[in-house]
Amino acid sequence: MATSFVLENNARDAMGDALLSLITTGSTVDGVLEILETASVLVTFALTTSGATSVNGVVTFGTIVDATATGTGTANTAKFYTNAKGALVATADVGTTDATVILDNTSIATDQVVSITSAVITVPAGT
Image (cartoon, rainbow, N blue to C red; front, side, top):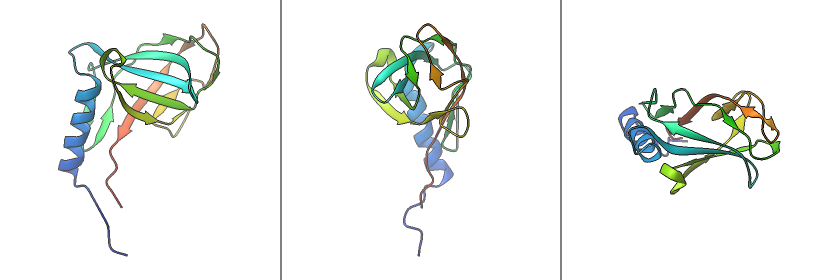
């Protein structure tokens, strides 16, 4: 079967740049990353442009400051928002390995300090 649609690196790079810009529209803290169990918010992080990169469609966020959980549950979803949670930009998977958002632990309790090991959004190349 022939390839149906493939984005070249320059197109993936432009899309990654646009995603990063949309999420972190300001020069400091703007984006919001929520970690949820289905629809229940467990913990909310601030996203900054500091250390964030976008190369060939791979958006990598720099250091994300630890946050204190406001809910209890098993993290299974991440939601990326624009500044002050203005608009939902993307929904992603969460895990301790092999996920868009890597946490130190997916079992979260209220008042627990939660750490993000990495947050990387990859614009798909196509099929």
